[in-house]
Length: 226
Image 1: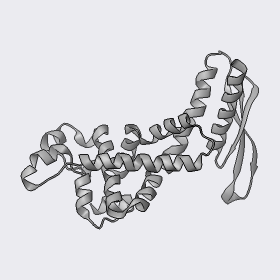
Image 2: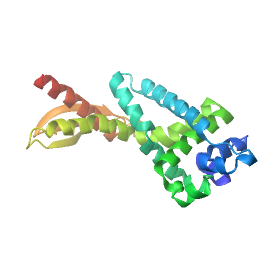
Image 3: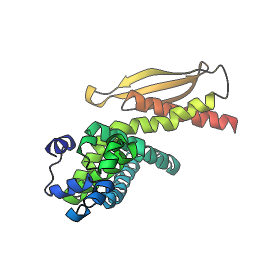
Image 4: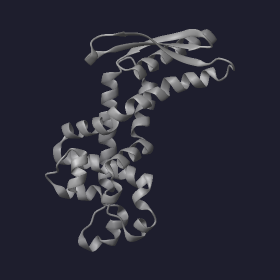
């Protein structure tokens, strides 16, 4: 478990919590006489801790994002696919405690099992150290890695889907300005549809600026079509 703690960047005071988080129900059923308990209760708690931290982060960092977009972005960040990718990054599979049958049937690489174990591990950190280390871990493993991609799907993909209804209208993004010192750059991007500028946006990264430009274009095209 030392290797996993190193990857988590967190050392447990109660190692039993981490062991419990890695215990699948199939293992618990086979070792009931030894007092083994599955990670299902931890998974339940981890789901709530994760949802709260992500929702709080999105609310604070996107003051202009409407409720519907907040909901979709949160869903993208906490979905099974996202948690599965986190588990792969932590190499969680080899650390799982699985029953013999589940292990033989590929349980260590099954996305649902890995995603559930990720939630259980987050809950174990929360119970062991409180909300502060849980928040730091969620930010590093999920928010910092996935938030831009989740937000990009909201606006850039939505714009692509809208424009596809009109053949011959390619979408292009162009950097028009960079301001600020190296440690705090601000990028301004324009998006053109069919050769015509449709929106402009700025952000701390080029991807964020593109996302804001796409959002502006959606608002403009939406107004023009309504």
